[in-house]
Length: 396
Image (cartoon, rainbow, N blue to C red; front, side, top):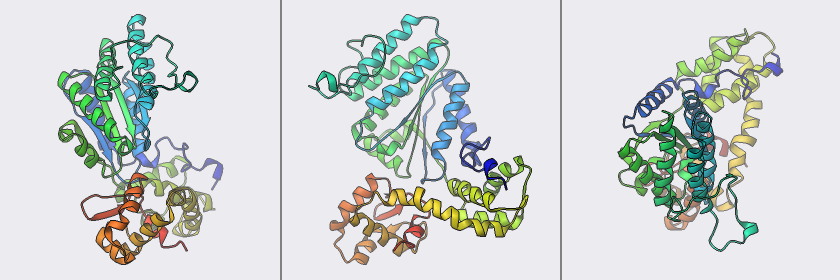
């Protein structure tokens, strides 16, 4: 096969494998956009799932859907230990620019930008020297007395209200998309929930779409007890067999090639139905195939190449972030579950390592903060990365 025209290469397909089987989520968001635009109450949305199931790609598609409806849309990628003000300011600045081209009152747009700038400037630490102060790149003077109290909860409510009212001026809405939402600092998560609660009461046309690891609902619930009522939680999982086959068949058929049923069986078995792996093994198989019909032997020959790339870019890059103590903990998890994608009892890990459970808490907590493991329920711990246990068992 021609590697230059590999339909599984990132960006090559009209619809990437990560969006196969996500029609239900896309249709549901279309309904959200319609309801909010009509002033009807609607909960914000939270997508949860392991790494490699396509949450980030799905977020991007939801953003595109909002833009096609004439909404303003901004996207944030949360980072551990980093506050929300600065990235949120940039995302909402982008969303306001989306709306500004349709708004007939430039003064009104500038008024909202002034509030946004006041909010953004509070990201600078008190007493910072002028040369060290971050400037948000908004070419209007900062407003005073609005979204500038320094209390993130108060300021976020006021900012969201201003931006939502601007969207309402043009009969539109605002979509704020937050990736890696579990990494938003605790204080900022609380403020975000409070702002969503306030706007839901008023029916303002602003919707938050968050995406994160499986323990994200617990993070939100710990922040605000009413978070269960604020968000509609959607679990994004691996693809079932029919959707996984569709993710493989669609790009192959676009290139007027074919694939045998045995090859589809082999790709599903080796990828586990996880979209990222479907794409990785599909790409390697296309490059390995010499005929226009891909067979099971092509999958077998391509597997080591795909696994080599995954070992460096997907698994290895995460493993390298772990300290020696954390790697010991990860390896113990992998040994106990025999490489399967299953949770391990924390008590069993301590017993395996012949350590007191309390002595392992720092390593476990650090791994959770790094997004390598999560606790779905008390006393159990699992990998956030599919097939990570299997990878660890191959390492010396």
